[in-house]
Amino acid sequence: MKIRILTFAAVAMLFTGTAQAQDLSANFAASNNYIWRGLTQSVNEGAISGGIDLTTDSGFYVGTWASNVSYAADDVFSYEHDVYAGFSGEAGSIAYDIGYLYYNYDDEAEFDFSEVYGSISIGGFTLGANILADTEASEGVGQDFGFGEATYIYADYAMEVGNGLELGFHVGRHEGDFNEAFNGVPGDYVDYNVSLSKDGFSFMITDTDLDDAGPDNLDNDEIKFVVGYSMDFEL
Image (cartoon, rainbow, N blue to C red):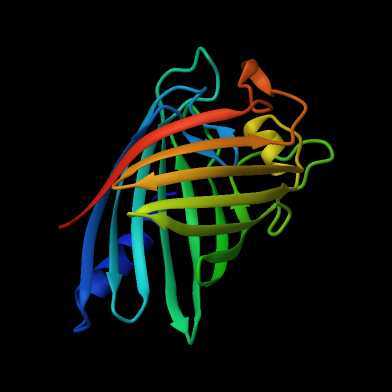
């Protein structure tokens, strides 16, 4: 884990030492629920998150992001700390993004894992995929957590409906045993949501096709309503 974090720090230093233009920005967000691929990561309670991103005019970027998390009603405070690096750009009318994302959790969770990801966008439509790269989690009977043994495929569409108000649609499908070990729900499921956002404020209605709420009655089989506020600023 420390080696991975140091690697990302080295990438950031490499960017700093080059002559190309760079942008350093930060972000902050607060919401009444932390939803990740349709599933609560905060036992349906509030979450506060923030991060820092360094981008260059060549399209390379590196960043870090953190949030409070909780996976059971009696959990003590836990955190998720992500680090990532990638490359994004455009080819004609098509935008693309590829990268590597490492999810780092505290000792209470002990479930660090990483993914490789990629997406393409045309206009307001985006199609993307995240693929499990590796994990520190132990494999169980009938479970395989090797590279590519878990995938998340998704499609998003966003459009402005007037006066800066954006309407968004999302549908995704998670396949593989890893999510059953990580979130306590069946390995294959679909999540979907509809959202409205403007000036940093957002409202989302999200649900899954799950028939089982999962551990500690997390209600992952129920419709959830999420309100939040986020802001970005230059450093």
